[in-house]
Each structure stands twice: as C-alpha cells, then as structure tokens.
Image 1 (cartoon, rainbow, N blue to C red):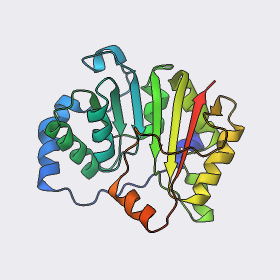
Image 2: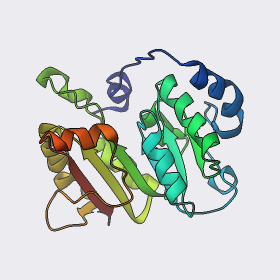
Image 3: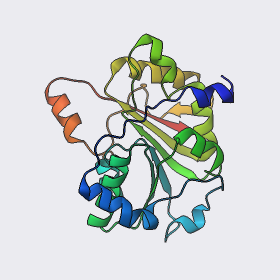
Image 4: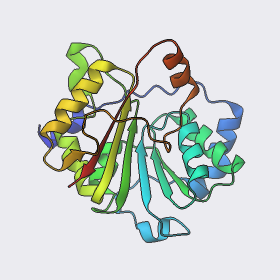
Length: 226
C-alpha cells in the first residue's frame, strides 16, 4: 500500500459527540500544560516529561480512564496518549488534574501521521492499541489500523525488545491481528500462543467487565520487537 493510499484510507471517523462542561473546561485550562500542539517538528522526548522514564504510547485511549489509571499506578513510566475525539481528550485532561499526574502528555491528531513524522525512531518502550474500531463489515476491513505496513512503522519507533500490545473484543479482528503479526518479521509473540492473558498493567474497564460477565470474549495479543 502506498503512503498516499494509507493517508486517504483512515482507520477512524471523526465523531466528536457532546462535550460536557467539565471536559470543555479541562480543554481550555489544561491543554496548554499537558497537550502537545499539532505541527511538523520531531518531538524531543528528553524534554517532554519532567523525568526520563520508559515511554508508553497509546493510540485511541477513548475516554482516558484506562490510561489515567495506568499512569497513576506506574509513576515510573511516562505515557503519551493519542485520541482524535475531543470529549475523550477533555476527559483525560480532567483525570490528569484530578489524580495530579505529571507523567502524561496528550495529542489529538492522526496517529499514523504522528508516528511517521513526529515520533523519533527507537524511543518507545511499549505501544498500546486497545479496542480499536473493528470495521467489522467486509468492505470496510481495509480501514483496520492493524496492517503489515503499520507493524513496520511501530517497529521503527520501539526500542529493541519493546512491546506491541493489542486488545480487542471482536474475535474476527483478533484473528486478523494474529495473521498480520505472524507475517510481521520484526515481532514475535511473548507467549507460546497468539493470545496472551490480560496483564496486570492493563486495567479492566467497566465495559469490558460487563461483557466478560455476559460471556463475551476479549483477546490480548502481546508481541516483542526482535
């Protein structure tokens, strides 16, 4: 797939939704402190955070509750969250203030473009992609973000033996992820099987917990850069 096609076929749709007053207030007050403005310059990871700790980058953090929980429980790590939906960005900013987190930075642009042009190679310790849009209709599957070209891009940004962690509640997408990762020369599964138990560092969301109690499946795929 050419770079031009990859830019045109995006893996997300801009669905802004309603922004609450609290989210709007957080966007107004806190974005200048924790948000990373859009631009073309390469990020300087050494000055982005107060401390130079291993960096976890998550794409599509939703309402931000899971990312905020991880940042609170693992202060020895730094976190960058990328999300295009403004209500989620505002909610994460609100949680950053509520939990007094200094180890989180937020971006609100196309993740693929950010990875290509703004994230230096070999600087990310763990890359997280939790519950991305499954694009379950056959005609839309080309829009799934997990493609072989995407794994090559992630491998460039990860440190050696860095982790690429995916999770989905769609079995068909889980199998798609498995097939893509089997063909990815830069990665190997950390377990003997394609699917891994949910690690302690990934919080169990209310939505996920409710689904599991109803018998719905969730699949974690965790791969290491080799």
